[in-house]
Image (tube, rainbow, N blue to C red):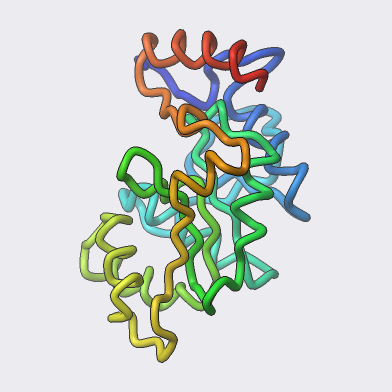
Length: 194
C-alpha cells in the first residue's frame, strides 16, 4: 500500500477503526496487537511479544494477555469482514473440542479471521522459538493432532459451503494489500451491503 494499512481511509474512519468497531460488536474486550503509531488508538494496544514474528507473534501476544479461553483474531486489512461473520466464526467455539476455529475460502484457510483457544499458546511459543513463523504450518500441526494434545482433530474448519449457506460471501475475506485491492473492496462493500 505504500503506507501503514491501519491508517487507510475506510468509510468514516480507517481500516483500524472499522476492524475495532466490528470486533467490539461480538467481543467483550478488544485489543490492537502490534506496533501502532497512533496518537489516540481506538482500542488498547498490545505490543508483539516477539519482534519480527509477524502475525504469529500477534496471535501469541493476544493469547498471552487474554482473560478468556477464546480469542477472536482479525487482521486489519480485511475490511469486508462484518460483526455477523465474526459472530458466526466465534459461534463454532468448542466444536469437536477444537483449539482453533478457522474459515476456509477458495481452498485456503483464513487464519487471520479465526478463533484461537488459549490452550494453543504452548504450541505457538514452540513455533516462535523454533523460528517457524508460518501460521499455516502451525495449523497443519493442529489439524493432524501433533500438538501434544489428546484431543483428535484440534481444528474446526468452517468450509466455504457452510459460510455460503449461512449467507456470507467468499469475497468478505478479500485481503487489502494494494490500492487496487482497496478499490475492489470499496466496490464490493456496496454490492455486499457491508
